[in-house]
Image 1 (cartoon, each protein chain N blue to C red):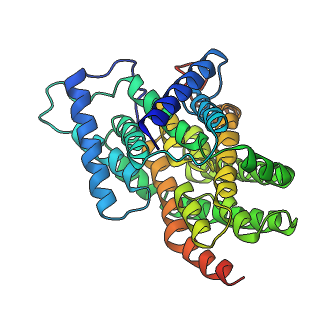
Image 2: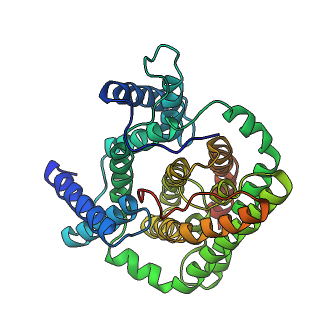
Length: 178
Length: 182
């Protein structure tokens, strides 16, 4: 249901239109206070513009450097969260933390097998859809490798929505009293 | 964050991504820039938080790039996996909370830090919730960053498993190491 993005997009004008659509979508979804609204809104906005019948060259991907710059900015934002004190604290829980991450990855594979065997989801999509990674990073990986983006975004969006709307309020209430 | 600090961080991230590409880090634009950002933060010291526009621009660029790859049929895909997707999500969240409680049981971090650090939801929301409960939000963020790096590093292996699964079904996904390593 997705196509592998070629290296070049549909020209600067087309790219500008897609980015504008993404920016408007991000703005609208953020105004609506949707979780991960900036990212999901940008996905929806860009997709809607790209499918518009009035585009002269039809649907085209964005140039690869756009994705690279976006990922690098995300990486920087995550990197500045780490400093020496934080790393020391993390070192104290390194063993159970690594074990927990391994458990989540193992669960990813088990769930992926279920999706493949029982629901006929393609394996790449199944593995990425159940991966406990960031929505942005997993989505861009899926888009690059040709995963079914509807499945991928659906499951990750539901995950973030469930955490923010259901799990988080319960955890705050329970842990806040402890 | 001052304009100078933003420039230094951009430079550090770009250098990190460049080195990451040279040494073939998985997802080098992200993981390389992450290492670069951490090095800059450690070198500069003190509080360092990227401005809001930084995160917004990053998400719009990535989101627009993803959106441009979507073709008709996404709604049907969404409906087809709604039930198994919900079950998968419930399992992932449940195991995340359980892992957090087990980490807290070691007594090395508080229950709030451990649970919010292991629930696989949005990093920003988890950090904000930990801050609201006066917990060490930096450790919560660090746990999420490590999970992210670990999962991204394991993606090539996971996709190889996917290929093995695909062979069993008669189809085969593309090699994650074969294209431009983003």
